[in-house]
Amino acid sequence: MTAQAAADETMLIAGIARGREQDLAEFYRRYHGRVYAFLLRRLGDAADAAETANEVMLEVWRGAARFEGRSRPLTWVLGIAQHKALDRMRRRRPDAVNDVQDAEALPDPGAGALELLAQGQEAERVRRCLERLSDAHRAVVHLAFYEDLGYAEIAAILQCPEGTVKTRMFHAKQGLKRCLGWASVEEGAP
Amino acid sequence: MNGVAHPDELLPWYANRTLAHAEREAVEAHLRSCARCRGELALLAELRTKVKQSMDTGAPDDLGLQRLLREARRTQRGPARPARRIALAAAAGVVIVVQAALIGWLATREPAIEPLGESGPAGVVLQVRFDPAATEARVRALLQEHDAVVIDGPSALGIYRVRLPGLQVGDRMAAQKALAEFRAARGVVAQAELQ
Picture (cartoon, rainbow over the protein chains, first blue to last red):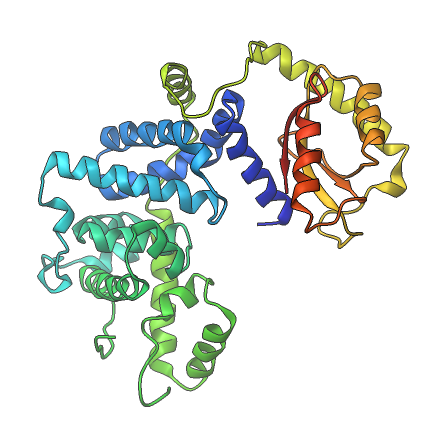
């Protein structure tokens, strides 16, 4: 991001803090899609994700004055989305947020994974395999590979140590490789 | 690293190009002599591509935005909200007129405009959004009063960067005073922030 773009973003949030609806609308246009994608990946339900994304944007409206500019706006808004996603999961199923499924316990993907890849259905297959991951693992993969965020930024969003982010990614990758039937190489826990 | 331990923890972030310089160099040094990690990296790169393709959120939802704005108007917020009852459509039209006037005026002052990102002379920099109803003459008067120079803009949001060369960067009190004076210029400045 250029200096002007970063300054623009900060100005945008300052405008929201001052009650400028047009700045909220611009923020929505810039970030709603990414917030929605994060929530859809977490919640797995389009209606829930849309409803929660709206809650996130309202929180931006209410809380813009608290933005201190120490992180990028994307990190800040995804951090809000993280809280809202956990709230919604708790309402759905109280133990859901602790459901860090062991990659070893993933269901067998069954035969034909490689054939699906060859037939150009990789993206759909990856989506289905991501759904089989635990929420904690899926969140890290999404932020690392969909948003291209660094591990420190992901740790800030998920509010966990950087080492935890790396470990979750390691196990998520192992689970995905098994699910996708991708070639295995000798593995060792980090 | 090679032959002792593979940098599995870092490879995903090497694949998404977010590693800091030192870590990136360490991984690259390992990759040069480790076929196993090169294979792992190729797999991660493929996975990254597929993860991006696996989510299509479509275009921004205008109905969702209208709902958000309706709810925002009903929502209590912390800081007081300034009076603002200008119809958006009308305001947008005025913004274009004012910006055209500013751009024309700036074009006549070309030597004072510096390219974005170029290190220029010292001085406090403000980010300013001028009031849509402000005339070019009033904007010019405000800038001259503060011996200020427009150095960049307008951005996509209509924001200008304005330098006050007479103020030292570290002089917070003077900077805050200038900021307050810009904000107090009713009818000229819609919003001003310190950069």
